[in-house]
Length: 64
Image (tube, rainbow, N blue to C red; front, side, top):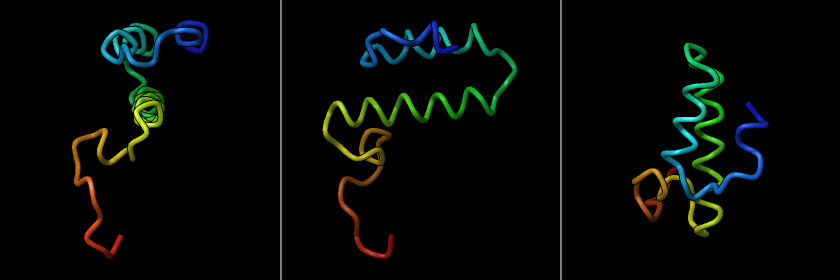
C-alpha cells in the first residue's frame, strides 16, 4: 500500500481513498486504519483538530 500513497498529494482525499480501495479490497481493518491516518494528516495540514476535519464540534464543551 505504501508505494501507492507515498509522494501523493494528501489533499486529494477521494483519489487516495480510491487507491486504497483498489489495493486492499476486503481488508476493512487495514483500510480503516489508513483512512483515519489520511484524515488526520489532512486535518494537520489544515491546522485543525481531527474532530473538526470529520465534521464534529469545533470546540469542546468539557468532559472530553
